[in-house]
Image (cartoon, rainbow, N blue to C red; front, side):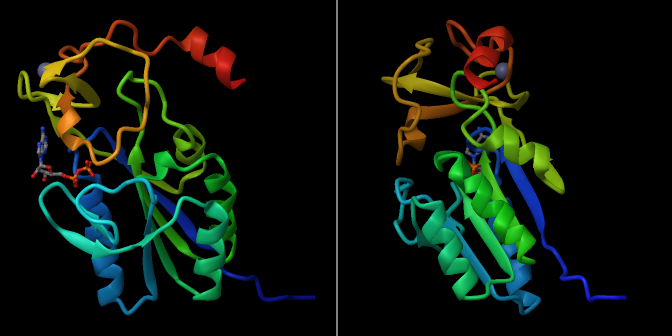
Length: 206
Ligand code: ADP
Ligand code: ZN
């Protein structure tokens, strides 16, 4: 007996530190999907209020109209009811881990899901749902910014305090509308008292 297989979708991830061009790349991919006459939607976390509360905006000013929600459940309901074939999600690291099941459900339903997010927080520790999403993705693009101290490729987001690098590794992870509180740094120039410690991380995760 043959039965038609429902076509599944895919998950693409664009990750990297702040200023690496994640939003730019997300916008580029989604604009191409619009040109290809796909039914495209982009979501962003409701707490990411940088520049504009209804647009996904890159640091260079490029914009795309977005739905703001902090709920994976709402995102899923909206995306399914509107039959979006391409779903973008910016700043995906801000969502709680329920975004993982939302994304899996969209991919199962046939959507091409393109997400952009910080792979690490400012301490250099894997950010929220990102490690799992990276493991299940069909494709991963890890972008680099430019280190503002030495000009090398930068993988890290450096937290600033009074425009000076801070080595503090505690405090809120989410400082929204706050790109002026961060700069991009390479591994050698990233200043932090204590960054990623695998043994410590493992105790909190597994
Ligand atoms: P992200 O979403 O990764 O934070 P954006 O797409 O918002 O990145 O912004 C990328 C743009 O930021 C670059 O095209 C460039 O114009 C600008 N920019 C500012 N500072 C830096 C930096 N240190 N390294 C690279 N790009 C930077
Ligand atoms: Zn450097």
